[in-house]
Image (cartoon, rainbow, N blue to C red; front, side, top):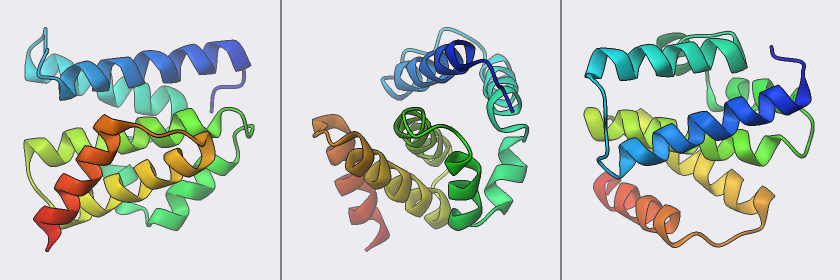
Length: 130
């Protein structure tokens, strides 16, 4: 995993910004290019691919996040929430929806913030799950 603190924070912020942009429907690239960027970022941050990440339980993913410094963790949880939400928008899956909700809720708790867009996404996903 990435060790340079500043570099890691920049990577997480850039990946989160990309996912946020994609969630707003502002994709400026081909789907293949977007997938390549996502896979590259996941390999840089977690040393894994999305299919491999999806094979992990929630607890195993949390363990991967918890090895990072406490001040880095909220951004990682936000990034994971965005990632699973984006992937769920592409192809609805109960597992992706639950993972997105879970990581968004951890992010909100750890960052101690209130995010209207994220709370709307959580409500949307919970509605789809019922």
